[in-house]
Image 1 (cartoon, rainbow, N blue to C red):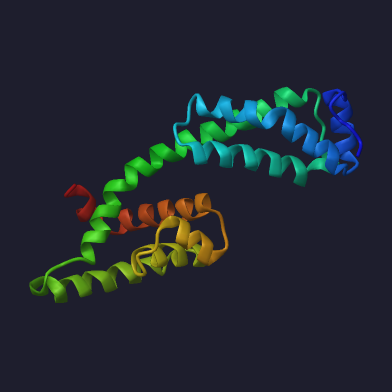
Image 2 (image 1 turned 120 degrees about the vertical axis):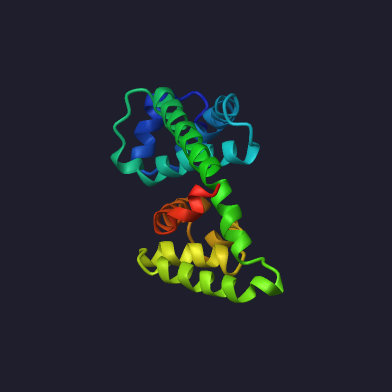
Length: 186
């Protein structure tokens, strides 16, 4: 087996451009732990940090033939920093819509006296969803009507959890515009 330990970053990038998996593995071994620690300084969730690092390396491999990198270290840290910024922005959006999740969940959990009203409201809600793109509509319906978690929706639709969260955020924004009186009550 070829040892990459003594190769410079520039040499590893050059080998990586040619599809050398060993060079990719050497880059991963050289930087993964440090990138993880860098993400953990800002992001408290271990799994999120691991996913960010994996996403950066996945992107690196996917784009390996077209890489134009002057400094591998700078490129990797900048990529993780971008992922952290996206996480923080997404977390803010998620927090804003958490209350809306509660409202919509309560629509489906009513007593017998309100069952008919709730069913009517549910049908109105589902009709409002018809204006959404197909994948977005599918994600919110699985989340609301099937009561699946975002991870379960992602697995069922064969997409990332982040994409599900984006779809649900779009759907909630659409619904909020459709039901302005419900959002004023909160």
